[in-house]
Image (cartoon, rainbow, N blue to C red; front, side, top):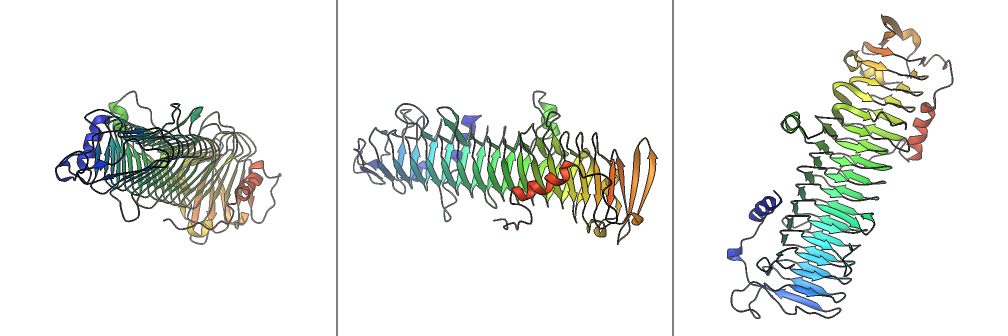
Length: 493
């Protein structure tokens, strides 16, 4: 399948061998600091020739310039097209670099500026030093604001590099394996940065790196994995998305301390039909996270599993939602997760199989502000949990809240707070089996909530009968501590 992807991508790329000009490189054994120029003329290899010799040198700070219409093609020999494993190489390509194995191999600090085509049956661009270890601090620039057709295509990984790798993409990147395989001598590569304005598609994983990922996926840009995760990173990832991030497995999988800001679409593309057709598949999530902060004005979607799924985390997490969060469970936590989740909702949180929020253990909180819609009930699980309806919520909401689904406080001392609602404006009806219907009479009419296991109900005209649970304090503390309380969001790109 990897070779098929490469063949398809090459066929779709904006070039044709039949009409290409020739190429000759004036120096295949440069010294340190030398510049090699590959031109679209026939002064070295004879009429109408393509440069078929590999450029393989161990000098430092070599500059290679491949001019417009020039072609370096070592596919017949099976050699890497350009191999400069010492430090500081710079490769500027406006033509075509086609490797017989890998297209470009460079050492520490390799810089590649591509305005044309880079292609290989194995990996397209590899950071590897002379000792064979992954090279750090690579910089890859594919296309530009005026060039969206620059292409990097590989049967294997499109880009392999170590710590500090930087990619800026305006064009097309296609990989039969991973888009970016970040690896160092000790494990996954850390501090990788990706700025994507173009289209990036992998058969296997999209971006797979260690801690400290910074990803900016701009409006209209796409990162997609056809068979696996689109983005897989360790701790302290920062992800801004105004485009589309699509994974057949998890769209995004991150560890502790993540920061995700979404104005576009983050989607697990797997379907029920996919799972039925392959019994080895497991249902996956749109976002799989240990802990961190998620701000959403777009869509976070999974039709086979949770939209947001929390694995056991070391610290509390915050969600601010103004968009759509939809999954079989909207927001889910692992049974073993004892950390707290704090959710502020002014959009839609939907559980297509009946539960919108399963918050599990820990002191959790849900704040419903104007515009909040919960499709499906909520299970707050063990802990001192808190659910708050702000003062203006019932001015805009009538009918059955969450279609009459049950909101269960679970074990522990749980508290409901109605800001701006006096107790005289409510009616509590016993439905039996410790289940109650609470009717709120707002400005537009009556709203009914179905409740169980809430030890304290607090109205605007009454003090709390007991001290508020820890979640009440932590909710505000978590927002303020992250610098998010009252924050003005920048518009999507």
